[in-house]
Length: 199
Length: 420
Image 1: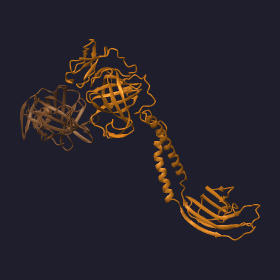
Image 2 (image 1 turned 180 degrees about the vertical axis):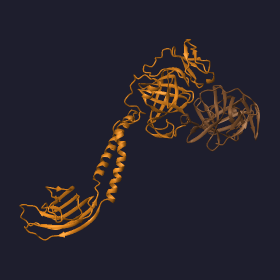
Image 3 (image 1 turned 90 degrees about the vertical axis):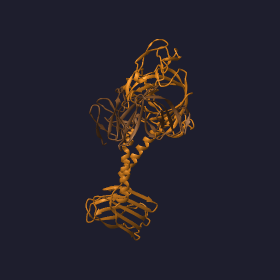
Image 4 (image 1 turned 120 degrees about the vertical axis):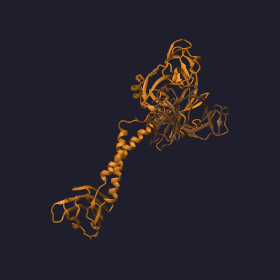
């Protein structure tokens, strides 16, 4: 996997950039959030370090799933009513990125898609069907923090409503409703026992 | 919430100190092991129900808080449920891993099953098919084993659902040993589980499970095991293939080449003694020689003698009553007036050999004659005899192993009520 290096505008540390389309990065050394805009790197503020919990996935530690190898390069944590979930931005062998959502042993691979419109959070009630999908979970979440590099800008403390929909075959469809609009992703639930983390 | 983890609380009913064993934020209920109070873990441990009379399972090899690894992943026992159905009881242990989430360890008549919830739905609903009918799930073909209703008789600890003594559920279980796929229906939801049989020794050594509960002889998921016949059959398979291959190779390509075929017609010899001699060459001494004689003689009246030309020492004497010499396998068939002789033998030196027909001494006074003698000599012949024997022996072992397996599988399905 090709990497190039940028310099943190706050502390000057070298920061290897793994994904060339990354838009947000956290400096490992000083904890600065950095916007990556074309060739420019802009300071976006500081965040506290995310508390560490036991996790199968770790930043920069490759893992394999179904004969593909993935490298986690970024990680976002969201708070919700029941606890928290993690979203890992991982890069596969071909350099393509995919999100891995992890919530206490529930693992899902997801790719962002164009959201269906028009759609309202209120219309998607629990146990109802939407376009062949069953609404299995809905709630409100807040971005608690991030680490590594990400392909999108996230704002710490920003909150949104979310809906999870399921379909036969372990398929997952998730929607996020915020002031910025709707974000959608489709994916599949995976068995964590089939994820092999490289030693 | 597991980011605000607490290690213990007091029962909101009896104030007993309760240890929390690390279940995460999906824990919905906590049941006091002292007074049987079921508390809502998502609502300040509000009392949902109380079952002070519940009896602790008499045969529980695991206890709350026990830890061990399954498939290399560290789990902790955080909850216990005992079930009852149609005269039998079993225990489900809710276990939790901080990296892999929740799972169940089921202890059923001394056998262990590791069960996890799956979101991959089966190709058919387990309620829409009949017993033994198959469907696909988890990329495997399962067959429906049984359907039954079960009732909770004991519950304690942290659980991912609110469980109360007396709660009932409908279960449909399908198997593809050692794997299981089950569908569980309650008033509120339907969930699917995928699991596999785990060796009791693994649970005993990993979790320190009590060993005093011996396993029943049969369990639906128990893999077929045989210490002798199955390994023997496995070892016999390559031998069967090898002997089949070699036998076919010999039969088709190493059957030797014909040296000579002659049809000899003799004259009436009345009551005179007769001695005919026939000569044939032998070039190959390493392989067998085949002698095939078909005579239209008056029954069993002649013996056959083979010797090297100009040698006085007979190499082989063939007769219906006495056969001696360097022969390997001789068949002597006499049917009515036809005598058929087939003999395999080998010689040590190449050269010309003689076959003589020697009349037996009998009291029969009628005319004796050999009207026609068909003589066929082949050399360079390799016998498939021993490879054929090996093939038969290997197939026999494989067949016996198959019968053992069939008997085991029959017993497995008989327990479901469909095998009988």
